[in-house]
Structure formats: C-alpha cells, structure tokens
Amino acid sequence: MIEERLVIGAADGDAEAFLYPPGPGTFPGLLFFTDLFGIRPANQGVARRFAQAGYAVLMPNVFYRFGALPLLDFEFKMGEERSMQRMNALFASLTNAQMERDAPHYVKALLARSKGPKIAVVGYCYTGAMALRTAAVAPDLVAAAASFHGGRLVTEDADSPHARIADVKGELYFGHAIEDPTATPAQIAKLDDTLKGWGGKFQSEMYQARHGWTVPGRDVFDEAMAERHAQKLLDLMKRTIA
Image (cartoon, rainbow, N blue to C red; front, side, top):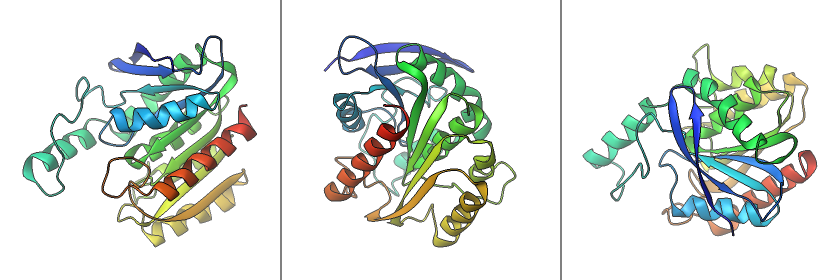
C-alpha cells in the first residue's frame, strides 16, 4: 500500500495530509475527514481499506489550526480534566465558517491526484457536518457525501449543517448511532424532513451501535456495524464516482 505525505495550502495555513492510492496511476477520489481526535493509526487503517478497494483516499489534518499531528498525544479519558480541555480546544479550532473555507482546498487537492471530474467525501463524528458542508460549497465537484455518527447536524443556529442541504447536488448518506447524545431522535427527524423536502437522492439509516462505532480501538467500536458502514460507503462510491 502506497502512503504519501502531503502539505495542502488551506484557508488559514498549511494542513498535513496523507494520500493513499491503490497503486500507480489515477483512481476515483475519496476525501476522508477524521473524527475529533484526528489522524492516527486506527483511522489510517480504515482509509487503507478503502484505498485497497480502488480509491485514492486523501486524509487531511482538518484541525491544523490547533497544531501538527498527533492531535492527541496522551490517552484520552472522558471526563478527565486534561482530556476534556483537549477535546474542547479541538472543537474550538474548527468553526462552521472555517470548515466551509477549507473544504474547496481539500477538494481541489484531491482532484489534482485522482481520476474523474468529481469526488466523494466522508466525515465521522464532528466532521460529518464538514462532509455535508463540503458537498454544499463545491456542489459541482462532489458527487456524494456521507456522514457516520455525525454530531450536531441539526442545531438551532442559522448556519446549522442541515440548512446547507439545499445547496447540495450530489447523493447524501447519513448513518446514525442508536445511542448518540449529539444526534437525538428529534434532531434526526428534523434532518430527515429536510432531506425529504430537498428532492435529491439520499439515505438516512440507524445503526444498532454507539456514537463512534466505526473507529477500531475505541471502547464503542462495533466490528459488525463497522463492516456495514464500510460496505455502505463502498456502495455509495460505486454508484457515484467509480
């Protein structure tokens, strides 16, 4: 498996990135946004899985404003003071507006190294919203966007992620966790109502898993549901960019 380290000029600085192509040549592109804890071996392994299926996978450090990799250089423990301070700092380092300003840079960087006029994008946890926003700010370049255990997709703010659906032209997929305080049944219902009124092609499904189930090594990891997520994303890419 080929691994290339890149530097991408984003809106407010340089973002480290990894590119995983299946081999020499060009392939359909997948833009992979990590969860809040950033690029690390666990999600790099997931990226390699998609690369082995025939896709050029670009994984940028979307939290570059916070700092260089690794973003988490100690064992995270929910509720522990240092861990919560780091989590809050990462949240604060990437606002909604910054997501939308950075997204076109990542899309263009991947298009320069991949095959086809359009790409797919996937986001996990905090960046599920970023995947949706990317599809909205680059509608002619994003054929599909997927969010897995995406949080805060529906808020009361004027710039709520779900408010951007109207600007999307590609296919959308949302995989929700049955246990997720960041995506309540009421919020999911509002998201689904927005999707139904949008008129585009979409899927919005529940997984019998807890928030964060896709990431190996976490206590919430669910192997069977993680495999389902992988197949759903592969199916989406086969329909839209392969």
